[in-house]
Image 1: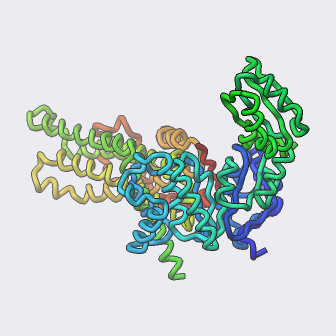
Image 2: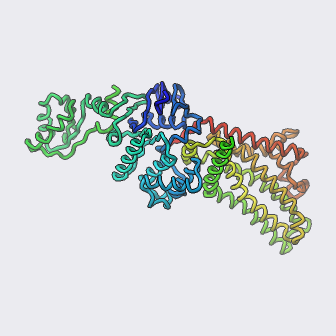
Image 3: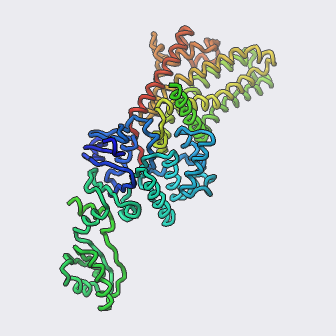
Length: 308
Length: 271
């Protein structure tokens, strides 16, 4: 049991009568693990349990072989980035981190050195003297990540760290997370967006309604998703013609039209093949596609498939 | 062991520094400062009235200062300052959802409570003491430097009794702030309900209030039959040693309870 950084056995957490985590068992080893699930799945609750902010209602949770609840010494080894957009907003980015460094047990030059290093990691050195109140959402996300890594923890828990970040910041943070994982740290990163997690790791835990519904390599999760009909919605100049052309293929299992007659929803059990043939069909038959989106890109829909 | 003690003090100091700078920036500090300095305003009005001969010859500046200390400072300003600061000790971190930053650090709960409590004591002192000294200086000014110096022991006693009151009330309100969802409401009921109403009940029940022990240590007994007597009821004081022990004991006990609560309670911080 001690080789695992985090080990949960039949872990449950209830908020009164509301279930946060339900009989969850899993383990974490060094590297980056994605914690995927729709909003309200129990991701934040799980991270808070590991960080020692909440007490398990039932089951066992060990972090580095120790119980995290009421264990302040263990927190030297844990970095936690909360989902909440909360700060002492009158502080500058530098002062915020300096206070965090002092609260982590550093003082004097060592504290300042760590602050500057973590500001550099999240590319906020140029904004260090600005008040956090004046930071953009993306900058606030980055300073939260900085406070989580400032004390060089072995286990880093990041709750929706990329929320509100611009594409460049997002890319930089994904690179940082990957690098921290390669350095041998254990990172558990929550998100409700599959491709975000795919960009940083192959190891994922899928959680829904407080339960782990899949765990392991992200490709396996993809396979699970692909076993279910994939839904695509089109708006085009001739939806009926498009539907008649697509219905011939055996992977297309369902077609339905929108009420205004301008849209058609296609369900395919082989989305890769479907997308491969689609351009030729459209071009050969002169169909003008005005819009196309997949409601299945929403993870909620994917989870609904998986839990059925 | 030595290392652990050093770490504890370091952690407490870190919490104190952050909490104190946060405390000073709150709107409640400005409000309390205005309330405290309104007393200095009254003292100034009294001094001007005295200068123009509008004050009766029987009213001595020290008497006015005594009345002000008991009714305005002790029974109101000390209570409201410790109530506001004590209830905010953990409450503000929960409301601002910043508590997680403290709870995920290697800080024992006793360090968090002690650091924040020190900030409360220093913050309250900075609000109240300058106003007390200002009132003293203005109200004793008509009697010259010798009058001011002669009564300095009274002022010093006031200062340390107020400090004891900060300690006892601050720890009780800190406990409310750590353990309940509506600490201000509970604090108001305690401070202006229990601590006030109980003194009007005949018998010995007033010994169940903190105010009884604070007043027992207070040097201002002049108000018995004086101008402020209609505002206060004063019974036989408790012994000085007893009062000191009770106030210190209550203070330490409630700090301990606050620390215990913080260690054992789950705080749900929602966006």
